Image 1 (cartoon, rainbow, N blue to C red):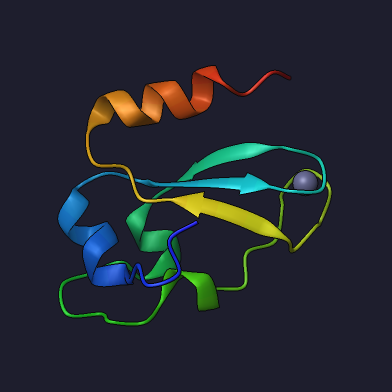
Image 2: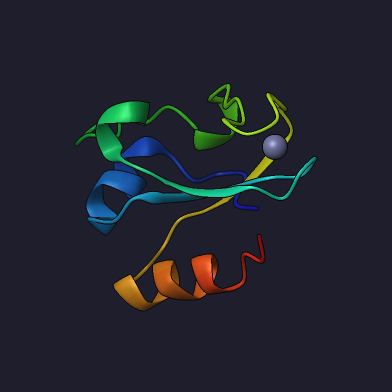
Length: 80
Ligand SMILES: [Zn+2]
């Protein structure tokens, strides 16, 4: 997990944020508008209070994708 990643960096990646619930291992690609990822928003991603849509858990891990292939890999690792 990238402790120093901020929302500006998510915005500049041009890709949704990869988020995984540690409790049930549910994974999701979160769109920029859902988390306020925009130019100049230096708020840290780790401070966002994510709630898992599957189990309601709040203990999550995230990754900022660098390229579209990262999104595919992230979701391919997700075994439902
Ligand atoms: Zn969950």
